[in-house]
Image (cartoon, rainbow, N blue to C red):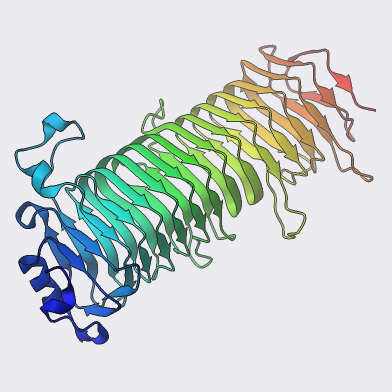
Length: 454
């Protein structure tokens, strides 16, 4: 009593199986099972958990395809849970009737420009596993309120139009795990959060690639947009995140509301990822308390990392390098502006082309305070290693900045402009450029114990 073909579905890809599937949902035993075939539907199959009870959808080992030939979600799960994840917040009957709606081993194919794969609202412990969603405007669409969502071992691929793979759309959602998924070829964003309140989001062990649009501005593999909303307590770990150059594009973009404390976006960890091949590899704007460590950055065509109007950012033990197998007009480098209390520790930064003969460099820090740059190796920069411009209460210590090129283009190892004695430059090993190793303009930073390389 769960097999949709027993209720009249043909699964031939031509016949409209919508009503047969609904019949199975209302008269069956609590699950929808699709055997091999292509099941065409022309309106949303809605699963009202409060009245239908606990429901699971199975694709019989992935051999079945559900074709959504109309706008809207192919499957919409509607729950009534209004509490949080604490057991005491469940209303009577919600736990027994609505927990863990599941979709597994099914392909969902969008046959309409506005088709959506799966939509969840008001659910508790929604679980998606082993699912392939393709040619949809949104792959998985999370709206209004949900709790404890698990998306695992799934393929969200080749979206339709300005597509988003997993879309947190005006949702209040705590406790989400996205694990072991391929999220690729979505023109607008692989994963996007917008107008939402999010806590405890883990993105782990995923391949998030080629989510870009060369014909439109602003795309990203992972886009956390907190300009309206708050998103805190998240991790992006052990993922491969790469794309191709597109206007305004970023591999990872976290952006908060522009308030003084940068409090709408923060408490994030970005660790042990491969992040490469976009206009900007990592963009942090109006963020707070973000740790970026153990990542490999490559091929940032505008910059590797841009930090704007942020507080308490820790950039540590990352490499910024280039792939010798790839050409192109990469720029790479780190730019920090209008920020406070940031540390850059243990970075290896090689062959950065950022800046010009007059300004900028491998690491450019401007109009910022409480900056600490320690133990970094900045090798073979095009113009200069470090440019400090109007920086206060900061330290550059124990760094190696030099060029090993046969025909070096280095202007200065460190250029300090408009920096006072509260900027300490000490114990660095500096290569000599055309204008010297340490060049000071319009200020008097405190310099001691710096050595010159041979």
